[in-house]
Amino acid sequence: MTTLNIGNQAYNSQEVADKMLTDIQFLQSRIALLQQQPNPNPKVLEIYSQMLESRQAVLGWLTQSEASPAQKMG
Image (cartoon, rainbow, N blue to C red; front, side, top):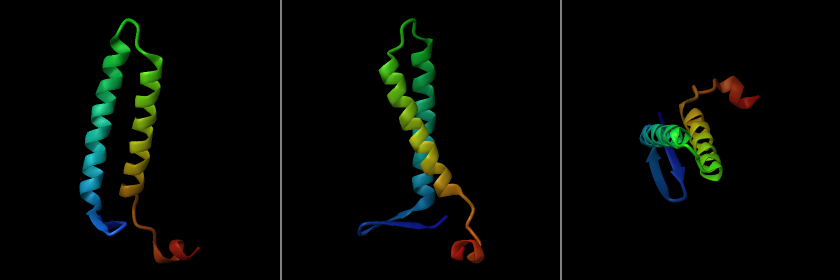
């Protein structure tokens, strides 16, 4: 992994990826619990699903393989 610079702060991308994994697991468990309820709140399910999708996208971005120099120039 690499260093992410956000503003004046530097973050280890592995630590951010680990946090995303923790968040993803939490959201997946919450969604599963909500779906087991007799009358789950559809708005809460929608929000949790959007949050899950967002975190999965960030994790995918963080863990994608490094592009070759030729790909970066193209």
